[in-house]
Length: 283
Image 1 (cartoon, rainbow, N blue to C red):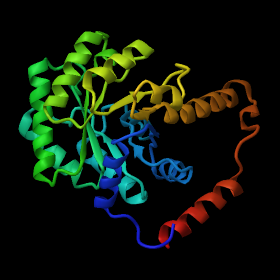
Image 2: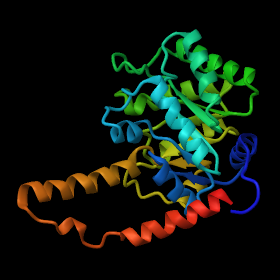
Image 3: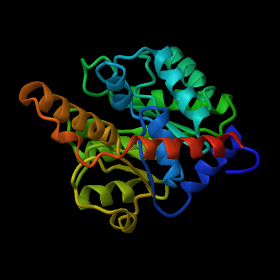
């Protein structure tokens, strides 16, 4: 890249434009290296992964502190020239004032978008009741608007990954979140064409994010034909890396074999990419 790097406002405008038409994949890096490599592959936007980041730091998903999470967002936003969406879990606050303050701080990290889940981060209750969840989306929306309003808000219905796989409930929640000010809607865990199309139809014309984190067999073209606007992969890329690491390390520890190193990308190849990438980034 040459010339002036895009500003935070530029990236936010680009992110909103991406949600107006078409369908795009938004992969989830978990550190600067993975973010820069994904950017180098030409993805138009990136999204954080709470699980990928937490595991890379030695925590269970949801365990890092607010300050750690915000620092991670800030680091990735500063390290990349494409829009970054923040997986902000439940806003890392149960009370509305805390949620609003945290969303304000999240916006200040330079992200182009953020998502708010309707599941408490404490792991004790699967979902907030609908009225509470809607109030929380409204609080997040108001905090974003006070900060300028250009950050895109995604409302998440978490039932399918929290043990409450009820499509009617998910649709009811997503429609309510759309009415409460969410710009994009997301029900992680839905898997079938029927579920996907039902969600897209229910919240139209607002865009839908689909979590393509399993071997569902859907391509970008397939999902575009269903009306999906944005395709994320959650912590799956981070798990690919961790899975390969665990499998190979276990083989060394248990069998004394090093076969897992066969076919690896070489150190010179990675050095070449990051050296050239750094030159582009600083130009």
